Length: 251
Length: 194
Image (tube, rainbow over all chains, first blue to last red; front, side, top):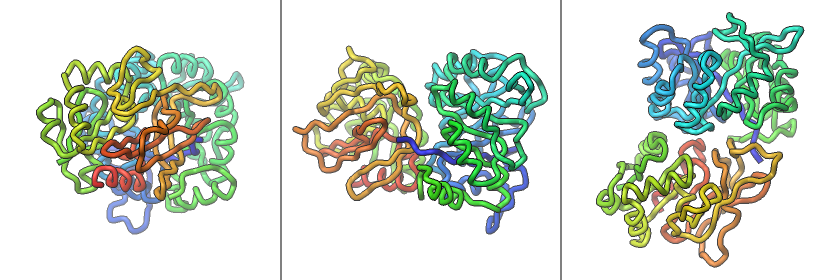
């Protein structure tokens, strides 16, 4: 039996967590290590860092952050953003993260998934997929939702799995930032398609949403703004899920 | 001094970080001489059973690890590092393991299960029950009844399997104690300080 996972997601720019983090009792609410430690203590099962730093400083700030987080937090964590070559993944994994997430770069060059999976194992190759809902089904987009691709969700998942993706982080652009719940239809489609774990992303606002995602086939729920703004803690979220009969790790 | 076996099978950084966090000194050991010079040895490992044994043999480390185990000093295997302490695995049926303990690893056959078994599962480990982080495709179905064990940890994934053990000076964890939160760190400390 594998427990359902709750995964806080932190957006990082220039080594600082961004997006209005408002924890109480934190000296410096933008410090990734401080926040990671806080989420770990609350019972987070994993962490995802999405590095949105642009430009050439990106690589070094990301590596420094990964090294610092890895010394302080002893749960698995994933880093995404700016990984275009297997060497980028190599550097991040050696710095101490457990998985790397690739998105646009994998759509442009699907061999990237194969390269990462061959070198480090599928278990650390996370494919992040962003989709918009259309009348003809879900369509994969890249560049933070700005660029449409030719891929239908189903076809891209088949291809990515064949290429060695070990886990899929599926974000509904329609629901992202809404706090109105995950897009359940895309999760159902993806979970029917996948033999690897599925992480639901985009739209979490309350415990009920995670429950719905798990029932739709997700193995894990990514949570962001609802946690960062201090209205909800991982501990409370998990307590609510346990009351609903969901098996989660309790701390 | 705790030695961490460096044989080209996976990232040692997380384990080093965890030991440092626990206040335990460690160093990487990559030669037979270095292995002989430590009080305790941790054998980590991620990847393929056959590859791991090839790495050990091509670096002439197999005899040194066996001699270390025979000396009675504590040896802890983690994940694939635990698997190669046994006789073999379906992952590489023709490749013998270190054979420090009897038993063979099998693959999960239940088609309704996602493989690898990745994520958090409950481990019953004597008085230390907890939830551990696993990433593995092969498992040890049962502890050899003829081999005495001080501690035995069992987890379930479609079926029960051996998740952790201590038998005399040999110990192993199929999961990653260095990635299993506070509970994992406590268990790691126990397995490297008894």
